[in-house]
Amino acid sequence: MAEVAGQVLIDAARTAAVNAHAPYSRFAVGAAVLLSDGTVVPGTNFENASYGLSLCAETVAIAAVNVAGRLADVVAIGIIGGMIHAGGITGTGPIRPCGRCRQILNEAAQIGGRDIMVYCGSAEGDEVERHHLSDLLPYAFGPKDLGIGI
Image (cartoon, rainbow, N blue to C red; front, top):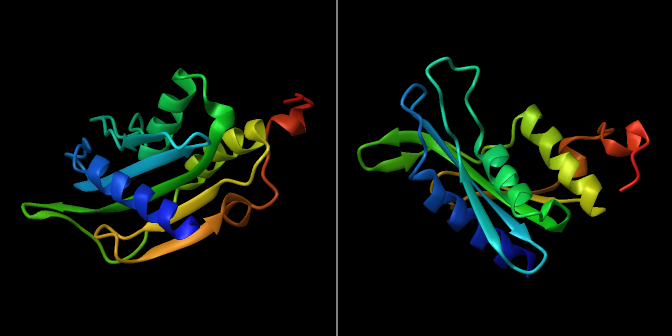
């Protein structure tokens, strides 16, 4: 079942990546968040001419989940990325969330009381890694460290 969910998320992330706004890096990233009721929420990277104000696909997807009031319901996320070419998006292997995105995902994990599954896929979706968020971000800092009961 986990592999089926992972492939659904990778496919949704690949669909989202087509809409990436990445005119500067030409590197498209798509993400898809799975909620506890089966809802899938997509996100894509959104670059800005100032570079520093760019948004990662994972952050965009988690922000959309938060807008819906569903941050505690995050179960898993799928991520893909690759270079934008005339024929589509291509890459050399699975990509993983950056440190900032791992921290953002940790916020949802601690609020939901679960170790989020992270599926990292290649642009084509033919290679997929499966990680628990706690393996990607051991000893994470979060709301509990601030004494905030969730």
